[in-house]
Length: 152
Image 1 (cartoon, rainbow, N blue to C red):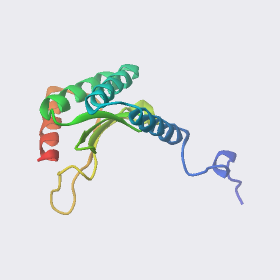
Image 2 (tube, rainbow, N blue to C red):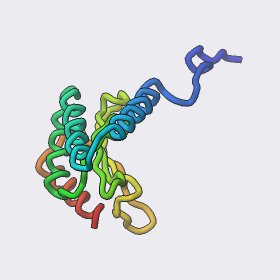
Image 3 (tube, rainbow, N blue to C red):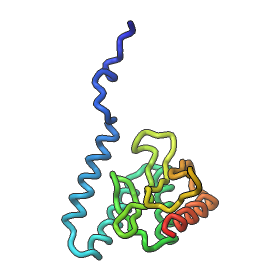
Image 4 (cartoon, rainbow, N blue to C red):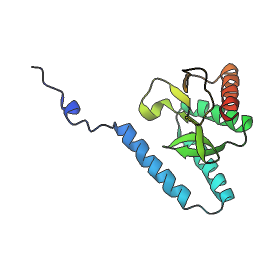
């Protein structure tokens, strides 16, 4: 019988990156709870998102900046906030879409995704997450169309 490597023996269900994301989410919630008025909360949340984007390494940072610009320009009613330490966009307090940088989970590509709040339904099956390796003008158009559809 082949012996299981030590790393697999101690696996507790979450990777180091997943545990870090959960800790970030708890910090995000605490930070949001300490804020004052709704206007203060919105302004602080956007500053948090922009600061998180600024911390990212290229090419994630460049893609996140473009995604942020497209989402906020396309549907100004979407409010930026951090979600598990990632830029996300909410409508009436419910998360609609998010950007996940590749480096966060040591992935091959960044992801632009949608929650079940997004109205992307198309038959019995539809895409809710999209891999990003670059944000071109064509990709920006597709993101804008998806975001519009998501809140329609």
